[in-house]
Image (cartoon, rainbow, N blue to C red; front, side, top):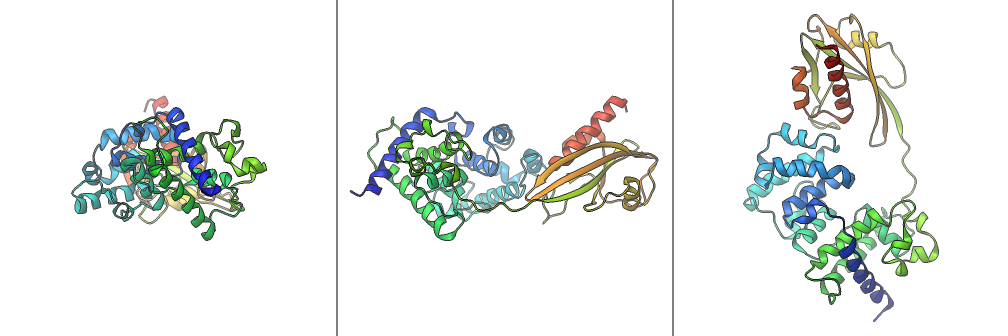
Length: 370
């Protein structure tokens, strides 16, 4: 038996024992329902567990079945997702639910290739669903697993490199396959392929963290090459970060006789289908907001009250959104969007930044007693 084989076996057994006693009690871990697990995996993409939990619980209460998700109005799925970001995820989730209803009779498919063929499901997500829900030995490779494997095997090359990425997938496959076939030493009954993959993700989230990993608490420390070589802080080698770009916008909350002007972002754009207040980009210069307002609406505002400044990020962009609020006697000659009552704003799915503006504007109206 080779040393590499012994290491794989040792790692698997150590991870399974550790996971059995240290796994977090997460709501989607209390079920083997592939739909519930699928929703959690989509929500968890680029989003922290503590953020996802209330969203997952609200989603499962509102749309408890695949058929319900397939038939839900677009406004409802966007509202349920409001604040999670990366809204293409929820639109693809609904498209996939519709495919499952049309092609699989509403039952989530169990074979890996059928799962992989669904909209919005890539190799990682398909592997996670098939292993966690069906205990199949399908490998997974996300940011947490990449970090664990590059440190465990001291892989110094960039994980995004094609050859290195293929090597990592192969290692992930070896681990989950070993879990499925090796004699059980962890408490039984245990879905070993499921637990192995979850243990890799859990280790990366709790112990093998990006900075200051807790190596002394790690169940596989004895076999970790990066720990032995004192290289944990330099791995994984993700290359240089893309430089961020600053952008500036001005937004306006405009009220006419108890109604507020909002607009919906068109398909094909970032945050498509979400709602926002009228706004215009002003990157590179600082124009007078009154001049900007006149340009956008074709009328001079009687007064512009500062509403606030929201700073946020979308991909590599660092955005500063400056907002003003005003009331007009009649609808402006130039406008784009829909007029809604103040009390109806909460029913719309806003982008995260504009949701903050809506909350601030409604609070101002409440204090003013209007």
